[in-house]
Every structure is written in structure tokens, then in C-alpha cells.
Length: 155
Image (cartoon, rainbow, N blue to C red; front, side):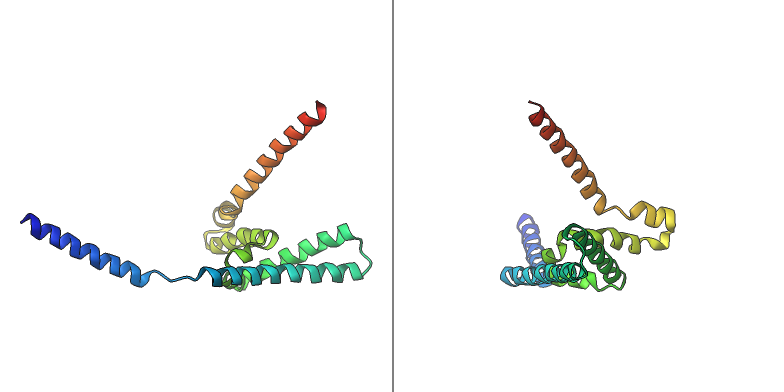
């Protein structure tokens, strides 16, 4: 009886392993790295084109950088709303997480997903589910580094 149970368990494990292998997508790391490089590079190229275009209007470098960020965030919000940026993110992986566009997408996507639950309990409560920890730890670490800087400058 014990051998029969062990045999059944082995067959079930083998069937399960075969099932998992059949439904698990195969990935190619070099291909994923190339896609991330191309998508991230394209986002940065678009940002540089925007920056150069703004500077061609006679705007100084600092103001042009601000306008570049505003335009990139606006484009990301628009593309996320049109369900295009998630497709770019799926194709480009980490390359689509270029800081300003990835952060904008992480704020807008939950807002769109939970808008059916209402303005307060949907959008208001869920908008920072992904971006919230980034904001929290970014501010906290900046505060800690600021204190360290102040202490070292005081001494």
C-alpha cells in the first residue's frame, strides 16, 4: 500500500512539473536586455529631442529641463490612459522604468484601474499604491542624507 501511494505521488508530481513547464513562458535574457536598452534609450532620446526643441526657443538650460519633465510626464499619462504605455512596458521591461516616465505610469495606472470605485475610495485611496513607497522612502532617505550632510558641515 505504501509503495502504491508513493507511486501515485510521484506521478502527480511529474504531471504537475510537466504542467508548470508547459505554462511557464520562456524568456531570453539577451533579448530582454536588448529590448530594455532600446526602449529606455528611445525614451531618453525623446527627452533629449524635447529638451533641445525647448532650448531652441531661447529658454535657458534649467527651465528647459523642467519643461522636458513636464512634457515627458504628460506624454506618459496620455499613453497610459490610451493603454499604450503598458504595452511599451511589457515589451521594454526595465527600459520603460526610466525614472520620470516609469514613475508617472505608476501613479496613473492604479488611478485608472480603480476609478470605477469612485473618486475618493477608488482614485484617492489607490493612486499611490505603487508610487507611495517610492515617495515615502525617497523623502525619508533624502531627509537622512540631509541630516548627515548638515552634521558633517557643522563639524
